[in-house]
Amino acid sequence: MTMLFVWGLALAQLMLVAAMGVAVWRIVVGPRAQDRILGMDTLYLNGMLLIVVFGVRTGSPLYFEAALIIGMLGFAATVALAKVLMRGEVIE
Amino acid sequence: MIPADLPAWAVVTVVVLAVAGSAISLLGATGLVRLTSFYERVHAPTLGATLGTVLVLSASALFFGLVEQRFLPRELLIGAFLTVTTPVTLILLARAALFRDRAEDERKNPEP
Image (cartoon, rainbow over all chains, first blue to last red; front, side, top):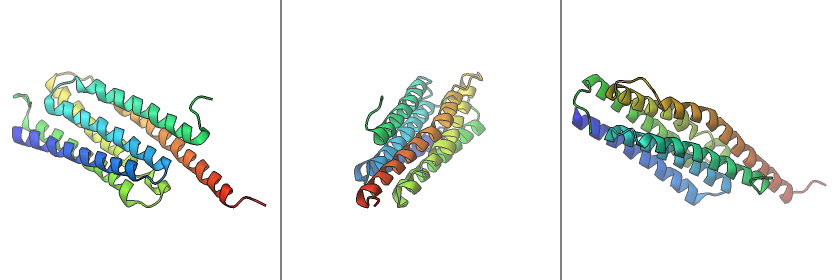
C-alpha cells in the first residue's frame, strides 16, 4: 500500500512537471506576447497543483498556504500582463 | 510518509484522484502544443484549471480529512478562487489578443 501511495503520487507529480515543461516550451517559442502569457498561466497553475500533491505525499499541511499564494499571485500577474497588452500600462 | 491507520480504500482513492487530475492537466497543457492558433490555444489549459484542479484538490481534501480527523476543507478556498478567476483572466487575455490583432490589421491595410 505504501508503494502504491508513493509511486502513484510520484507519477502524478511527473505528469504535472511534464505539463509545466510544455508550458515553458510555449513561453520560449511564442510566437506572440499573448501566447507567452497563456504559457505562464498554465505554468503557475500546474506548479500550484504540484505543490498540493507534494503536501499529500509528505503528509504535511504546510504546503497548502504556498499553493494558495501561488494561485492568488498568478491571477494578479496574468491580469496585469493582459492589461499591459491592451493599454500599454497597468494603472491608468 | 503514509500514516499507518489510513484504510486501503482511502489510499487507492487518493492516488486515483491525484493521478486522474494530473493526467487531465497534462492533457490540457498538451493542447498548447497541438493547437495551431492562439484563439484555439486559449481554451486548452482551462481543462487543467477546472477538472484537473478539482480532482487533485479533492484528493488532498480526502487525505487530510482522514488523517487529521476533521472536516475543514481548506481546499475549497483554492477551488472557489480558481473557479472565479480563471474565466476572468482568460476573457481579459482573449480580449487583449483580439485588440492587438485588430490594431495590426489596421496598420497593414488602413481604411480608405
